[in-house]
Length: 255
Length: 265
Image (cartoon, rainbow over all chains, first blue to last red; front, side, top):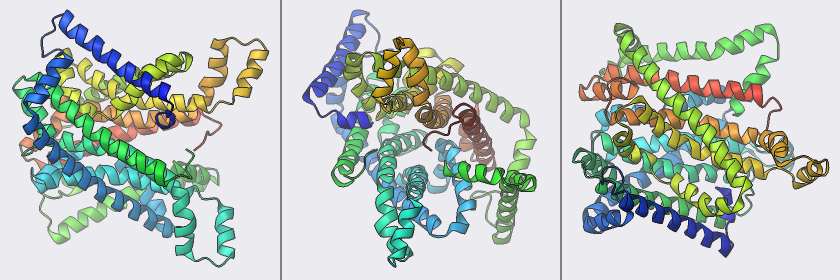
Protein backbone atom coordinates (compact mmCIF):
# COMPACT_ATOMS: atom_id res chain seq x y z
CA UNK A 1 0.00 0.00 0.00
CA UNK A 2 2.83 2.35 0.73
CA UNK A 3 4.22 1.54 -2.68
CA UNK A 4 0.99 2.84 -4.15
CA UNK A 5 1.42 6.11 -2.33
CA UNK A 6 4.91 6.65 -3.61
CA UNK A 7 3.81 6.21 -7.22
CA UNK A 8 3.73 9.92 -7.80
CA UNK A 9 5.77 9.88 -10.96
CA UNK A 10 3.81 10.23 -14.17
CA UNK A 11 5.41 7.16 -15.72
CA UNK A 12 4.18 4.88 -12.99
CA UNK A 13 0.67 6.30 -13.17
CA UNK A 14 0.52 5.90 -16.93
CA UNK A 15 1.85 2.36 -16.64
CA UNK A 16 -0.83 1.58 -14.07
CA UNK A 17 -3.52 2.86 -16.40
CA UNK A 18 -1.96 0.89 -19.25
CA UNK A 19 -2.10 -2.26 -17.12
CA UNK A 20 -5.77 -1.70 -16.31
CA UNK A 21 -6.61 -1.13 -19.97
CA UNK A 22 -4.62 -4.24 -20.92
CA UNK A 23 -6.59 -6.40 -18.49
CA UNK A 24 -9.88 -4.90 -19.68
CA UNK A 25 -8.92 -5.57 -23.30
CA UNK A 26 -7.89 -9.19 -22.62
CA UNK A 27 -11.13 -9.68 -20.68
CA UNK A 28 -13.21 -8.23 -23.54
CA UNK A 29 -11.40 -10.33 -26.15
CA UNK A 30 -11.78 -13.51 -24.07
CA UNK A 31 -15.46 -12.93 -23.39
CA UNK A 32 -16.30 -12.03 -26.99
CA UNK A 33 -13.79 -14.21 -28.82
CA UNK A 34 -14.58 -17.41 -26.91
CA UNK A 35 -18.24 -16.42 -26.96
CA UNK A 36 -18.53 -17.00 -23.23
CA UNK A 37 -22.08 -16.91 -21.89
CA UNK A 38 -22.85 -14.09 -19.44
CA UNK A 39 -23.05 -16.42 -16.46
CA UNK A 40 -19.41 -17.39 -16.94
CA UNK A 41 -17.92 -14.05 -17.88
CA UNK A 42 -19.85 -11.14 -19.35
CA UNK A 43 -17.81 -8.77 -21.51
CA UNK A 44 -16.67 -5.45 -20.08
CA UNK A 45 -18.82 -3.50 -22.52
CA UNK A 46 -21.96 -5.46 -21.64
CA UNK A 47 -21.30 -4.85 -17.92
CA UNK A 48 -20.94 -1.12 -18.59
CA UNK A 49 -24.13 -1.21 -20.66
CA UNK A 50 -25.88 -3.04 -17.84
CA UNK A 51 -24.66 -0.41 -15.38
CA UNK A 52 -25.97 2.39 -17.57
CA UNK A 53 -29.33 0.65 -17.88
CA UNK A 54 -29.74 0.06 -14.17
CA UNK A 55 -28.10 3.27 -13.03
CA UNK A 56 -30.97 4.57 -10.90
CA UNK A 57 -31.49 1.39 -8.89
CA UNK A 58 -27.73 0.80 -8.55
CA UNK A 59 -27.18 4.32 -7.23
CA UNK A 60 -30.02 3.89 -4.75
CA UNK A 61 -28.44 0.62 -3.55
CA UNK A 62 -25.03 2.28 -3.41
CA UNK A 63 -26.43 5.09 -1.27
CA UNK A 64 -27.83 2.48 1.12
CA UNK A 65 -24.58 0.56 1.42
CA UNK A 66 -22.44 3.69 1.66
CA UNK A 67 -24.58 5.12 4.46
CA UNK A 68 -24.33 1.87 6.43
CA UNK A 69 -20.58 1.59 5.97
CA UNK A 70 -19.82 5.23 6.81
CA UNK A 71 -22.02 5.27 9.90
CA UNK A 72 -20.64 1.96 11.16
CA UNK A 73 -17.10 3.04 10.31
CA UNK A 74 -17.37 6.29 12.27
CA UNK A 75 -18.84 4.55 15.32
CA UNK A 76 -16.29 1.74 15.09
CA UNK A 77 -13.33 4.14 14.90
CA UNK A 78 -14.50 6.16 17.90
CA UNK A 79 -15.26 3.10 20.03
CA UNK A 80 -12.01 1.36 19.08
CA UNK A 81 -9.82 4.37 19.86
CA UNK A 82 -11.62 5.22 23.08
CA UNK A 83 -11.34 1.65 24.32
CA UNK A 84 -7.65 1.50 23.43
CA UNK A 85 -6.88 4.77 25.22
CA UNK A 86 -8.83 3.59 28.25
CA UNK A 87 -6.95 0.30 28.35
CA UNK A 88 -3.61 2.10 28.08
CA UNK A 89 -4.56 4.46 30.89
CA UNK A 90 -5.57 1.58 33.17
CA UNK A 91 -2.71 -0.93 32.94
CA UNK A 92 -4.40 -3.51 35.17
CA UNK A 93 -7.31 -3.86 32.72
CA UNK A 94 -4.88 -4.63 29.95
CA UNK A 95 -3.85 -8.18 30.73
CA UNK A 96 -7.51 -9.22 30.69
CA UNK A 97 -8.86 -7.09 27.86
CA UNK A 98 -6.08 -7.57 25.34
CA UNK A 99 -6.11 -11.40 25.09
CA UNK A 100 -9.90 -11.25 25.06
CA UNK A 101 -9.92 -8.73 22.20
CA UNK A 102 -7.37 -10.75 20.24
CA UNK A 103 -9.51 -13.86 20.72
CA UNK A 104 -12.74 -12.15 19.68
CA UNK A 105 -10.94 -10.62 16.72
CA UNK A 106 -9.89 -14.03 15.45
CA UNK A 107 -13.53 -15.10 15.20
CA UNK A 108 -14.60 -14.55 11.61
CA UNK A 109 -16.74 -11.40 11.82
CA UNK A 110 -19.32 -12.81 9.44
CA UNK A 111 -20.15 -15.49 12.01
CA UNK A 112 -21.85 -12.83 14.12
CA UNK A 113 -24.04 -11.55 11.30
CA UNK A 114 -26.98 -14.00 11.73
CA UNK A 115 -27.08 -13.11 15.42
CA UNK A 116 -26.95 -9.37 14.76
CA UNK A 117 -29.69 -9.74 12.14
CA UNK A 118 -31.93 -11.48 14.66
CA UNK A 119 -31.21 -8.86 17.31
CA UNK A 120 -31.43 -5.68 15.26
CA UNK A 121 -33.75 -6.71 12.44
CA UNK A 122 -33.00 -6.57 8.73
CA UNK A 123 -33.01 -2.78 8.45
CA UNK A 124 -29.98 -0.52 8.38
CA UNK A 125 -29.28 -0.83 12.12
CA UNK A 126 -28.00 -4.40 11.90
CA UNK A 127 -25.50 -3.50 9.15
CA UNK A 128 -24.25 -0.45 11.02
CA UNK A 129 -23.72 -2.58 14.12
CA UNK A 130 -21.84 -5.25 12.16
CA UNK A 131 -19.57 -2.68 10.49
CA UNK A 132 -18.95 -0.94 13.82
CA UNK A 133 -17.98 -4.24 15.47
CA UNK A 134 -15.65 -5.22 12.63
CA UNK A 135 -13.98 -1.80 12.45
CA UNK A 136 -13.68 -1.20 16.18
CA UNK A 137 -11.59 -4.32 16.78
CA UNK A 138 -9.12 -3.46 14.03
CA UNK A 139 -8.83 0.12 15.27
CA UNK A 140 -8.57 -1.04 18.88
CA UNK A 141 -5.66 -3.38 18.13
CA UNK A 142 -3.78 -0.93 15.92
CA UNK A 143 -4.27 1.90 18.41
CA UNK A 144 -2.90 -0.27 21.22
CA UNK A 145 0.07 -1.23 19.05
CA UNK A 146 0.63 2.44 18.24
CA UNK A 147 0.37 3.67 21.82
CA UNK A 148 2.85 0.97 22.85
CA UNK A 149 5.44 2.18 20.36
CA UNK A 150 6.33 5.12 22.55
CA UNK A 151 9.91 5.11 23.75
CA UNK A 152 10.12 4.66 27.50
CA UNK A 153 12.82 7.31 27.69
CA UNK A 154 10.64 9.90 25.95
CA UNK A 155 7.92 9.28 28.53
CA UNK A 156 10.46 9.71 31.33
CA UNK A 157 11.76 12.91 29.75
CA UNK A 158 8.35 14.52 29.30
CA UNK A 159 7.40 13.37 32.81
CA UNK A 160 10.51 15.01 34.25
CA UNK A 161 9.25 18.29 32.81
CA UNK A 162 6.16 17.83 34.93
CA UNK A 163 3.71 16.46 32.37
CA UNK A 164 0.74 14.58 33.80
CA UNK A 165 -0.82 11.42 32.44
CA UNK A 166 -3.15 13.30 30.09
CA UNK A 167 -0.33 15.48 28.79
CA UNK A 168 1.78 12.41 28.08
CA UNK A 169 -1.16 10.93 26.21
CA UNK A 170 -2.01 14.02 24.22
CA UNK A 171 1.47 15.34 23.41
CA UNK A 172 3.47 12.15 23.12
CA UNK A 173 1.51 8.92 22.90
CA UNK A 174 -1.21 9.97 20.44
CA UNK A 175 1.14 11.67 17.95
CA UNK A 176 3.41 8.61 18.05
CA UNK A 177 0.46 6.27 17.62
CA UNK A 178 -1.29 8.22 14.88
CA UNK A 179 0.55 6.68 11.89
CA UNK A 180 -0.43 3.18 13.02
CA UNK A 181 -3.98 4.25 13.92
CA UNK A 182 -4.56 5.77 10.52
CA UNK A 183 -3.02 2.74 8.81
CA UNK A 184 -5.62 0.66 10.64
CA UNK A 185 -8.29 3.14 9.57
CA UNK A 186 -7.16 2.84 5.96
CA UNK A 187 -7.42 -0.96 6.02
CA UNK A 188 -10.78 -0.75 7.77
CA UNK A 189 -12.39 1.30 4.98
CA UNK A 190 -12.39 -1.72 2.70
CA UNK A 191 -13.43 -4.00 5.51
CA UNK A 192 -16.42 -1.83 6.38
CA UNK A 193 -17.82 -1.96 2.84
CA UNK A 194 -17.28 -5.72 2.66
CA UNK A 195 -19.01 -6.36 5.99
CA UNK A 196 -21.96 -4.15 5.02
CA UNK A 197 -22.37 -6.05 1.74
CA UNK A 198 -22.05 -9.49 3.33
CA UNK A 199 -24.63 -8.65 5.97
CA UNK A 200 -26.97 -7.31 3.32
CA UNK A 201 -26.72 -10.60 1.48
CA UNK A 202 -28.26 -12.37 4.47
CA UNK A 203 -31.23 -10.07 4.64
CA UNK A 204 -31.95 -6.43 3.92
CA UNK A 205 -34.45 -4.02 2.39
CA UNK A 206 -31.89 -2.67 -0.04
CA UNK A 207 -28.21 -2.13 -0.74
CA UNK A 208 -25.59 -3.60 -3.05
CA UNK A 209 -25.35 -6.90 -1.18
CA UNK A 210 -29.09 -7.28 -1.53
CA UNK A 211 -28.88 -6.45 -5.25
CA UNK A 212 -26.10 -9.02 -5.71
CA UNK A 213 -28.04 -11.70 -3.86
CA UNK A 214 -31.23 -11.05 -5.82
CA UNK A 215 -29.34 -11.00 -9.11
CA UNK A 216 -27.72 -14.35 -8.27
CA UNK A 217 -31.15 -15.84 -7.61
CA UNK A 218 -32.41 -14.45 -10.93
CA UNK A 219 -29.24 -15.68 -12.69
CA UNK A 220 -28.60 -12.11 -13.91
CA UNK A 221 -24.83 -12.09 -13.86
CA UNK A 222 -24.36 -8.84 -15.74
CA UNK A 223 -26.13 -7.20 -12.81
CA UNK A 224 -23.90 -9.03 -10.31
CA UNK A 225 -20.81 -7.67 -12.04
CA UNK A 226 -22.33 -4.20 -12.32
CA UNK A 227 -23.01 -4.20 -8.56
CA UNK A 228 -19.46 -5.46 -7.88
CA UNK A 229 -18.03 -2.56 -9.88
CA UNK A 230 -20.20 -0.01 -8.06
CA UNK A 231 -19.18 -1.54 -4.71
CA UNK A 232 -15.51 -1.33 -5.69
CA UNK A 233 -15.95 2.29 -6.67
CA UNK A 234 -17.37 3.06 -3.23
CA UNK A 235 -14.58 1.33 -1.34
CA UNK A 236 -11.92 2.77 -3.64
CA UNK A 237 -13.24 6.30 -3.06
CA UNK A 238 -13.43 5.67 0.69
CA UNK A 239 -9.90 4.22 0.72
CA UNK A 240 -8.63 7.14 -1.36
CA UNK A 241 -10.20 9.70 0.96
CA UNK A 242 -8.58 8.21 4.06
CA UNK A 243 -5.23 7.85 2.24
CA UNK A 244 -5.47 11.52 1.29
CA UNK A 245 -6.12 12.53 4.89
CA UNK A 246 -3.22 10.34 5.95
CA UNK A 247 -0.73 11.94 3.56
CA UNK A 248 -2.00 15.43 4.24
CA UNK A 249 -2.24 15.42 8.02
CA UNK A 250 -0.04 12.61 9.31
CA UNK A 251 3.01 14.02 7.56
CA UNK A 252 5.43 12.75 10.20
CA UNK A 253 4.53 9.16 9.40
CA UNK A 254 7.27 7.26 7.63
CA UNK A 255 5.82 3.76 7.68
CA UNK B 1 1.40 -8.79 18.94
CA UNK B 2 2.54 -7.13 22.08
CA UNK B 3 0.35 -9.56 24.02
CA UNK B 4 2.45 -12.51 22.97
CA UNK B 5 5.58 -10.63 23.97
CA UNK B 6 4.10 -10.12 27.42
CA UNK B 7 3.40 -13.85 27.58
CA UNK B 8 6.91 -14.69 26.43
CA UNK B 9 8.26 -12.51 29.21
CA UNK B 10 6.08 -14.35 31.71
CA UNK B 11 7.17 -17.72 30.38
CA UNK B 12 10.82 -17.22 31.13
CA UNK B 13 10.42 -16.53 34.85
CA UNK B 14 9.99 -19.70 36.94
CA UNK B 15 8.39 -23.11 36.37
CA UNK B 16 5.50 -22.15 38.65
CA UNK B 17 5.11 -18.87 36.83
CA UNK B 18 5.18 -20.76 33.58
CA UNK B 19 2.32 -23.00 34.62
CA UNK B 20 0.38 -20.01 35.88
CA UNK B 21 0.93 -18.16 32.61
CA UNK B 22 -0.36 -21.16 30.66
CA UNK B 23 -3.39 -21.71 32.89
CA UNK B 24 -4.25 -18.03 33.38
CA UNK B 25 -6.16 -17.46 30.11
CA UNK B 26 -8.17 -20.67 30.68
CA UNK B 27 -8.86 -19.58 34.24
CA UNK B 28 -10.13 -16.19 33.12
CA UNK B 29 -12.24 -17.83 30.42
CA UNK B 30 -13.86 -20.11 33.02
CA UNK B 31 -14.48 -17.15 35.34
CA UNK B 32 -15.95 -15.16 32.44
CA UNK B 33 -18.27 -17.98 31.36
CA UNK B 34 -19.44 -18.50 34.93
CA UNK B 35 -20.11 -14.76 35.27
CA UNK B 36 -22.18 -14.74 32.06
CA UNK B 37 -24.09 -17.82 33.25
CA UNK B 38 -24.91 -16.16 36.58
CA UNK B 39 -25.81 -12.83 34.94
CA UNK B 40 -28.16 -14.47 32.45
CA UNK B 41 -29.90 -16.35 35.24
CA UNK B 42 -29.98 -13.39 37.62
CA UNK B 43 -31.43 -10.90 35.13
CA UNK B 44 -33.53 -13.57 33.39
CA UNK B 45 -32.23 -12.55 29.98
CA UNK B 46 -34.24 -14.37 27.35
CA UNK B 47 -32.31 -17.02 25.41
CA UNK B 48 -33.34 -15.13 22.27
CA UNK B 49 -30.79 -12.46 23.18
CA UNK B 50 -28.18 -14.43 25.05
CA UNK B 51 -28.50 -18.12 25.89
CA UNK B 52 -26.65 -19.46 28.91
CA UNK B 53 -23.14 -20.77 28.13
CA UNK B 54 -24.18 -24.17 29.48
CA UNK B 55 -27.10 -24.23 27.04
CA UNK B 56 -24.68 -23.50 24.18
CA UNK B 57 -22.35 -26.26 25.36
CA UNK B 58 -25.18 -28.76 25.60
CA UNK B 59 -26.36 -27.59 22.16
CA UNK B 60 -22.98 -28.58 20.75
CA UNK B 61 -22.94 -31.83 22.70
CA UNK B 62 -26.42 -32.74 21.44
CA UNK B 63 -25.24 -33.12 17.85
CA UNK B 64 -21.45 -33.15 17.98
CA UNK B 65 -21.28 -34.95 14.63
CA UNK B 66 -22.82 -32.06 12.68
CA UNK B 67 -20.45 -29.52 14.22
CA UNK B 68 -17.40 -31.71 13.74
CA UNK B 69 -18.29 -32.39 10.12
CA UNK B 70 -18.87 -28.69 9.52
CA UNK B 71 -15.62 -27.81 11.28
CA UNK B 72 -13.64 -30.31 9.21
CA UNK B 73 -15.17 -29.23 5.93
CA UNK B 74 -14.64 -25.52 6.58
CA UNK B 75 -11.12 -26.21 7.82
CA UNK B 76 -10.27 -28.06 4.59
CA UNK B 77 -11.60 -25.22 2.44
CA UNK B 78 -9.76 -22.61 4.48
CA UNK B 79 -6.48 -24.52 4.65
CA UNK B 80 -6.47 -25.29 0.94
CA UNK B 81 -7.23 -21.70 -0.03
CA UNK B 82 -4.83 -20.25 2.53
CA UNK B 83 -1.88 -22.45 1.51
CA UNK B 84 -2.44 -21.86 -2.20
CA UNK B 85 -2.93 -18.15 -1.56
CA UNK B 86 0.24 -17.82 0.50
CA UNK B 87 2.39 -19.62 -2.08
CA UNK B 88 0.87 -17.65 -4.94
CA UNK B 89 1.23 -14.41 -3.01
CA UNK B 90 4.95 -14.95 -2.41
CA UNK B 91 5.51 -16.04 -6.01
CA UNK B 92 3.75 -12.92 -7.31
CA UNK B 93 5.89 -10.77 -5.02
CA UNK B 94 9.06 -12.40 -6.37
CA UNK B 95 7.86 -11.93 -9.96
CA UNK B 96 6.99 -8.28 -9.34
CA UNK B 97 10.32 -7.76 -7.64
CA UNK B 98 12.27 -9.38 -10.45
CA UNK B 99 10.51 -7.68 -13.36
CA UNK B 100 9.81 -4.09 -12.46
CA UNK B 101 7.82 -3.43 -15.64
CA UNK B 102 5.31 -6.12 -14.67
CA UNK B 103 5.03 -4.57 -11.24
CA UNK B 104 4.34 -1.14 -12.65
CA UNK B 105 1.76 -2.55 -15.06
CA UNK B 106 -0.16 -4.74 -12.66
CA UNK B 107 0.61 -3.87 -9.05
CA UNK B 108 -1.76 -0.85 -9.04
CA UNK B 109 -4.47 -3.27 -10.20
CA UNK B 110 -3.60 -5.54 -7.29
CA UNK B 111 -4.03 -2.62 -4.93
CA UNK B 112 -7.32 -1.66 -6.54
CA UNK B 113 -8.54 -5.23 -6.39
CA UNK B 114 -7.79 -5.15 -2.68
CA UNK B 115 -10.49 -2.53 -2.33
CA UNK B 116 -13.02 -4.72 -4.16
CA UNK B 117 -15.43 -6.38 -1.78
CA UNK B 118 -14.09 -9.75 -2.85
CA UNK B 119 -16.92 -11.60 -1.22
CA UNK B 120 -19.25 -10.26 -3.87
CA UNK B 121 -17.41 -12.60 -6.22
CA UNK B 122 -18.56 -15.55 -4.12
CA UNK B 123 -21.65 -16.02 -6.22
CA UNK B 124 -19.69 -15.94 -9.47
CA UNK B 125 -16.99 -18.33 -8.22
CA UNK B 126 -19.54 -20.85 -6.97
CA UNK B 127 -21.14 -20.69 -10.39
CA UNK B 128 -17.79 -21.29 -12.11
CA UNK B 129 -16.65 -24.22 -10.01
CA UNK B 130 -19.96 -25.62 -8.84
CA UNK B 131 -20.95 -26.35 -5.27
CA UNK B 132 -17.68 -28.03 -4.45
CA UNK B 133 -15.05 -27.78 -1.78
CA UNK B 134 -12.80 -26.42 -4.50
CA UNK B 135 -15.04 -23.39 -5.17
CA UNK B 136 -14.81 -22.28 -1.53
CA UNK B 137 -11.07 -22.86 -1.52
CA UNK B 138 -10.82 -20.60 -4.58
CA UNK B 139 -12.63 -17.80 -2.71
CA UNK B 140 -10.30 -18.23 0.28
CA UNK B 141 -7.36 -18.25 -2.10
CA UNK B 142 -8.43 -15.03 -3.79
CA UNK B 143 -8.97 -13.23 -0.51
CA UNK B 144 -5.73 -14.35 1.09
CA UNK B 145 -3.06 -13.85 -1.57
CA UNK B 146 -3.29 -10.04 -1.83
CA UNK B 147 -2.02 -9.11 1.63
CA UNK B 148 0.75 -11.69 1.26
CA UNK B 149 1.99 -10.12 -1.97
CA UNK B 150 1.79 -6.58 -0.58
CA UNK B 151 3.66 -7.41 2.61
CA UNK B 152 6.31 -9.56 0.94
CA UNK B 153 7.10 -6.68 -1.42
CA UNK B 154 7.24 -4.38 1.59
CA UNK B 155 9.69 -6.79 3.20
CA UNK B 156 11.82 -6.94 0.04
CA UNK B 157 12.04 -3.15 0.02
CA UNK B 158 13.54 -3.20 3.52
CA UNK B 159 16.69 -4.91 2.20
CA UNK B 160 19.77 -2.72 2.26
CA UNK B 161 21.06 -2.33 -1.33
CA UNK B 162 24.64 -2.42 0.00
CA UNK B 163 24.06 -5.98 1.19
CA UNK B 164 22.96 -6.92 -2.32
CA UNK B 165 26.10 -5.31 -3.76
CA UNK B 166 28.24 -7.15 -1.23
CA UNK B 167 26.73 -10.51 -2.18
CA UNK B 168 27.09 -9.64 -5.88
CA UNK B 169 30.75 -8.84 -5.37
CA UNK B 170 31.23 -12.33 -3.96
CA UNK B 171 29.69 -13.70 -7.14
CA UNK B 172 26.25 -14.63 -5.78
CA UNK B 173 23.67 -15.29 -8.47
CA UNK B 174 20.15 -13.80 -8.46
CA UNK B 175 18.59 -16.99 -7.13
CA UNK B 176 21.06 -17.11 -4.24
CA UNK B 177 20.50 -13.45 -3.35
CA UNK B 178 16.77 -14.09 -3.38
CA UNK B 179 17.00 -17.17 -1.18
CA UNK B 180 19.67 -16.00 1.24
CA UNK B 181 18.86 -12.30 1.52
CA UNK B 182 15.49 -11.16 0.22
CA UNK B 183 13.27 -13.99 1.45
CA UNK B 184 14.66 -14.06 5.01
CA UNK B 185 14.44 -10.26 5.15
CA UNK B 186 10.80 -10.39 4.11
CA UNK B 187 9.82 -13.13 6.60
CA UNK B 188 8.71 -10.88 9.50
CA UNK B 189 6.46 -8.81 7.22
CA UNK B 190 5.29 -11.99 5.50
CA UNK B 191 4.08 -13.48 8.76
CA UNK B 192 2.13 -10.34 9.62
CA UNK B 193 0.30 -10.89 6.33
CA UNK B 194 -0.08 -14.64 6.89
CA UNK B 195 -1.82 -14.05 10.21
CA UNK B 196 -4.21 -11.65 8.50
CA UNK B 197 -4.66 -14.00 5.55
CA UNK B 198 -5.53 -16.98 7.76
CA UNK B 199 -8.54 -15.18 9.23
CA UNK B 200 -9.51 -13.74 5.85
CA UNK B 201 -9.39 -17.23 4.31
CA UNK B 202 -11.76 -18.50 7.00
CA UNK B 203 -14.21 -15.66 6.29
CA UNK B 204 -14.00 -16.51 2.59
CA UNK B 205 -14.78 -20.16 3.22
CA UNK B 206 -17.75 -19.44 5.50
CA UNK B 207 -19.28 -16.87 3.16
CA UNK B 208 -18.62 -19.16 0.19
CA UNK B 209 -20.75 -21.79 1.86
CA UNK B 210 -23.68 -19.35 2.03
CA UNK B 211 -24.02 -19.59 -1.73
CA UNK B 212 -25.10 -23.17 -1.43
CA UNK B 213 -23.69 -26.24 0.25
CA UNK B 214 -24.77 -29.01 2.55
CA UNK B 215 -22.01 -29.15 5.17
CA UNK B 216 -19.79 -26.54 6.74
CA UNK B 217 -19.92 -23.90 9.45
CA UNK B 218 -21.44 -21.33 7.08
CA UNK B 219 -24.28 -23.74 6.33
CA UNK B 220 -24.86 -24.35 10.04
CA UNK B 221 -25.03 -20.58 10.60
CA UNK B 222 -27.59 -20.10 7.84
CA UNK B 223 -29.75 -23.01 8.97
CA UNK B 224 -29.72 -21.78 12.56
CA UNK B 225 -30.63 -18.28 11.42
CA UNK B 226 -33.59 -19.41 9.29
CA UNK B 227 -34.87 -21.48 12.21
CA UNK B 228 -34.28 -18.56 14.60
CA UNK B 229 -32.29 -21.08 16.62
CA UNK B 230 -30.18 -18.68 18.69
CA UNK B 231 -28.47 -21.47 20.60
CA UNK B 232 -27.46 -23.00 17.27
CA UNK B 233 -26.05 -19.66 16.06
CA UNK B 234 -24.04 -19.27 19.24
CA UNK B 235 -22.81 -22.85 19.05
CA UNK B 236 -21.59 -22.25 15.49
CA UNK B 237 -19.96 -18.98 16.53
CA UNK B 238 -18.09 -20.84 19.28
CA UNK B 239 -16.94 -23.55 16.87
CA UNK B 240 -15.88 -20.91 14.28
CA UNK B 241 -14.05 -19.07 17.03
CA UNK B 242 -12.13 -22.21 17.93
CA UNK B 243 -11.23 -22.73 14.27
CA UNK B 244 -10.19 -19.09 13.86
CA UNK B 245 -8.08 -19.09 16.99
CA UNK B 246 -6.59 -22.46 16.09
CA UNK B 247 -5.50 -21.22 12.67
CA UNK B 248 -4.16 -17.99 14.12
CA UNK B 249 -2.13 -19.72 16.80
CA UNK B 250 -0.83 -22.26 14.26
CA UNK B 251 0.53 -19.41 12.14
CA UNK B 252 1.88 -17.62 15.24
CA UNK B 253 3.58 -20.84 16.31
CA UNK B 254 5.20 -21.19 12.90
CA UNK B 255 6.25 -17.54 13.13
CA UNK B 256 7.99 -18.06 16.46
CA UNK B 257 9.78 -21.16 15.12
CA UNK B 258 10.78 -19.72 11.75
CA UNK B 259 11.36 -16.03 12.53
CA UNK B 260 13.37 -16.87 15.65
CA UNK B 261 15.23 -13.54 15.48
CA UNK B 262 12.00 -11.76 16.32
CA UNK B 263 11.61 -9.41 13.39
CA UNK B 264 10.04 -6.02 13.83
CA UNK B 265 7.17 -6.80 16.12
